Length: 290
Image 1 (cartoon, helix red, strand yellow):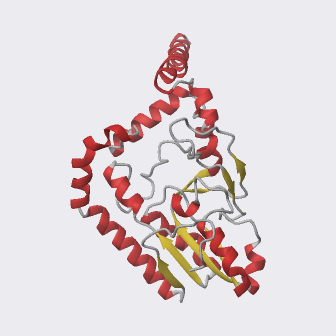
Image 2 (spheres, helix red, strand yellow):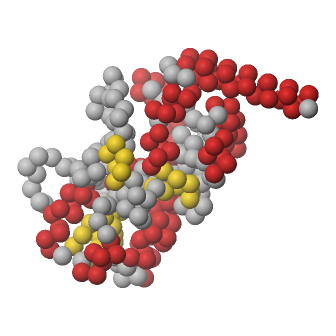
Image 3 (cartoon, one colour):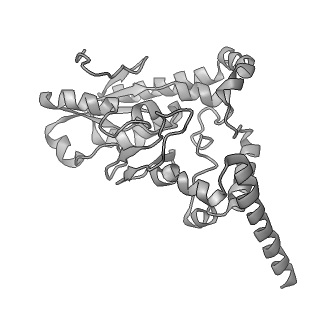
């Protein structure tokens, strides 16, 4: 009993130290306030044993967070809606697929529109332009996805709908993840949310603890050699050599080419038209349909 009591005392001392001293010194808020203000990831994303992570189904979420002083336009996950499948879509696909041709847009945060209103993303605008022609465009982007996620997502969630076409915008996260060591090629589980998302109900409760979260983050980072600190733009120049090294190292590019090649092959096998975007199309007021 004395040993258990001693361990509990040590745990609570560590909890107080981390939550109310370390976190305020580093982030300006205690752990509990900080996690409460960062509910976006917890409310929007969930662990997936096949995909690594995915969007939660049936989300209607508005983030009350205020813009940052040094980036007043940047509010992440401000206005998100998902259907029962976890797609960023608000209509019943089971009914639509009977009369309309479905086009799924896959990709990461640019496709997802992480900083946009749910009806201002490029798939939503494309859907508006195509719906009178018998097509419906579904936003199935997931922020943080690399090509391995997109390939697995196609297999698990898109192919069952037998779509007319898919549009893929992919590649940046493969490069960035390699540059900052936050994933491994062909592995969907060493991703940007790997140390943040609970994998079961017990962990979901434990993660409310600053001590548990810090230990899990340290273990995950150590095992995967992951950089967990952000890089302020002012010192980004110091990492130029590292970025150039990654550009010259073709490991990430070969993984991307393999995954996207398989993505295209499986679309062809299932008689699905496949379109790859090299650049995200600009959306601006009074833009032409072209």
